[in-house]
Structure formats: structure tokens, C-alpha cells
Length: 630
Image (cartoon, rainbow, N blue to C red; front, top):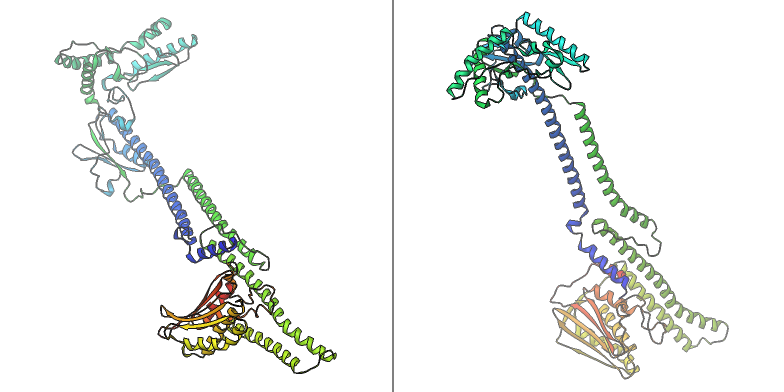
């Protein structure tokens, strides 16, 4: 079998088998759409989540900053006032500035001040903070001081006006001295009113400044009378605590060691954690009469205000645009890629369909999906069209050849009679009649072939005994077989019956028998047998003739096929007999097969449905299609 036929058969088989689900174009389009949708949803969800989280973090940070601002302001008020009696204006100002509702209550939740008192909204169960300048919450202030006491709670350490003036003058003298030495300095003031002198490279410490700036530096290192009295009072509170801990009493002074607040001005610095605890407890007890009592702070949203939304910032808008552009780019790229993969083979198919007359008009099959199946079907259609065109040309050529021979003979003899070369006697008339009968036989065969192709072939069926058909055909060809010195025999196994057109069935068996006698050399034999196999009536014609080669065997039923390529009238007929046999057999709902060995003979078998079985009539259009494909 030629390799091209093998490829065609494999392609046709694959197109009939269908496209696997995993390679289906519909599945791939659906998968691509789902992938794009999933990516879009995921990108949108991620963008929404990140943008919302970022905005909420910003909003939360702003709220925390405003809450910390409120807490610090109220701590400062508590550190500098002995009670909360006059805090309402400050609370109202803070609420207006921060846009929050601020409520101060006692530990028993008695209201001290409420920025939205007219609304009488219930307070939340959780407290925002406890305002106590002697126990500051460093998580709200962000401070890292050594003591939780607010530095603004100075109490008895607050300097008098005269003391502030004297210390300020000394600080200015020190800064002037340092400036002459080429060391710029700054003056800052602690909440108690004590000034501090600092430089970029050193602090105004006692061991350094007195040596370079004289007595003015010593003024800043000695406690004032106010501070001395407060420190003496603090010693009276700290030393009993130390004695209870089994430690020696200490003396507390002002060791001027840099920019520090009053809560760190105690000595010695290496007294340990016990000393620090006692000093801290003593300072709380000392400062308690000078600060406001502990209060509960509630900071909430303003009643009726929308606190759930947030504004879309410019940065968030840019992120949304960027992610949307990225998703759009990916979507367009995927769509372009998929459409290109779809359009390329379709464009190739369109171009091929626009040039149907081109030889070997084929398209490459690059996929296994529906488009690949379409390409396979197109290639198969092109191959069939080329075969049909070749068969049409061969048929025109063969019909012309078959008709030319008898017509040439008739014309030649008639011209001879007209020219006086031949005499129109009885032998000539008989010769012309034989040529006319041959011409009529060819025309009748062509008419049968055309009728079958046009689906106008009609059978007149009746119940027929196969043995009678075989006997009649053998009797009609007995003289021809005797003349060719070929032994003709027939046999019947049982008495099978079938529903058939007796005349057409005799024609089919007669064509097979005529071919067998013609191709069997003198001394050979031809046998006709009939039997029943698997509810089918078999009529077999076996000969011991020249046989058919394996290359020619698939074409024996083609129109105008002849084993003798010279198409000699001495060795062959019109080339339509076997084609008509196949048509007649298929019209009866059967089939014809052939087996042959070159040089040993051939066996033609008609498989016809018996009268007991329903006739397996084939669709005439399908039969015609099969014949054209062969």
C-alpha cells in the first residue's frame, strides 16, 4: 500500500475517532476564560485587601495618634493641677481638634467631663486609658523614661520667680563663656523652671564647666532653697523605705549630669533597683498632693458620624490603576495569543479552500483539537476530489476508447462499401450487426452505471432459488466454455432461496462466469457453487485462470478496469462487467469479494441475504460514495 494512502487512512480514522476531551478547543477556551477570570478576581481581591488594609492602617494610625495626643494633653493637665474641676474647656477643645468624643470619669465612672454630654450616649465597656501622671502608660506616649512619673509633675520642686531669674542669668553667662571658647551652646528649661546648658559635643556637666567658666557653672549644680527643701522632704520618705529593706540611708542631691528632668536627680546612681524603687515610691507620695487624682479616659467616635469609611489616597489610586493595567495587559495578551493560535490554521484553511484546482492542495495538521479534525477532513476531501477528478478523466478516456473501436469498425466498413471496395453482402451485414450489438452492450452497461449513480436503479424482486439461477447461467455459457476448451461445472449445497431480481442476479453471475471463461486458458476449469453460510446465500465462481496481482486486486471493481492493459478485444471486454456486478450485488443488500493468486486462478463470491433473513439493503447514496472513494 502506498505511504500516502496509509497516511490518508490514518487521518480519516483520527477524524472519525473524535477529539480527546483534554485537547478539545471548547475545553481550552473554557480553561483560558476561567484562568483569566480567576487571575482577575485574585488580583482584584488582593488589590482591594491590600488597599483597604493600608488605608485602615493609616486610619488606625491617625486615630492612635489623635488618641495619644488626647492622652498626653490630659496627662499634662493632671500633672499641673490638683483636681479636674476646670478640665471641661480643655476636653471640649481637644474633641473639636481631633474629631473624637472625649469622656473623663472617676474610677467609679462618675462623669468629670464629656465633650458630647448632650447626646447621653452610653460609654463602652473598655477604658481607653487611665490618666494618672504618677503612673504613665508608656505604650500611649511612646516614652522610654526610667520612671513612669510624668516629668511635668514637679510639685514642690517648682522654682520661685527669683530663683528662675538667677539661674537663667547663670545659664546665659555659661553660654557666653562657651561661645568664646568656640563651643556654641543652647539653653533649655525643665518643667520646674531649672535651665540646662548643652552643646553639640558635650553636656554642661559639673566636672567640666566649672573649670572653664568659673563660679557661674557651680550655681547651676547647686540646688536652690526650694529644691533643697523638697529634696530633704524626699529623703524623709525614701530612707525609711531603705531601712525596711535592710539598706543604709542615702543623701539625695542635684548631680547635674546633662539634659534630664527632675525625676532623675537623685543619688547615688549605683544604689541599685531597691534604691530606685524606694525613691520612686517616695516621689509618688511626695507629688500626690500636687497632681489631679487618677481618672478613666474614654475616647470614641462622635455619635452619628460615619467612622467606617476612608478616603482613597492618591497612592492607593495609583496602585489600583497599576494593578488594573497589569490585569488588562495579561488579559489582552492571553486573548491575542489564543486568537492567533485559532486564526492561523483557519486562515490557512481559507487560503487552501480558495485554490481548489491546485494540485496536492493540503494544509498542515498541527493540533489535535476540532481545528485539527477540520484540517484532516479538508485534506481527506481534497484527496477524494483529486481521486474523483482522476477517475473522471480516466472514465472519459476509457468511454471514448470503448466507443471508438466499434464505431471505427462500422465507419470503416461503410466507407469501404461506399467506395466500392467491399460488397454489402450478408457476411458484412452480420459483421456490422455484431459491432452495433457491441456498441449497444457498452451503452447499456454505461446506462446501468449511470442509473446506479443517480439512485434510479430499480429491482423487481421475487422469491428465487439460487440453484436455478446458477443452472440457467451455466447453461447459457456452456457453448462459450466448450469453444474455449474450458471445463464448466456447477454444484449446489442444499436448496437456498433468496429475494432478488432474477434477471439482474443472472446478469451479475453471468458477468463473473464470462470473465472467468475469458481469462482461463484452454484445458482449465471454471466451477460455480452455491451454498448457505451464516444466513447468507453464497454464489462462488472459481477459475484456474491467470489470476490477479496483489497490486491490481483492490481495483478489480473499478469502472473500466481490465487486467489486459492493452485493452485488446481478444483478451478483454468493456471493463464495466465487474463494476456492474458490484452495483447489482449491493443493490440486493449484499457484497462481492475476490481472492486471487497470480498464475493460479481467482475466486469471486457473492454474499446475498437469504430469504429467511431481512435483506441488508445499503443506502444507495452511501454505496455510491463508497464506490467513488475506491
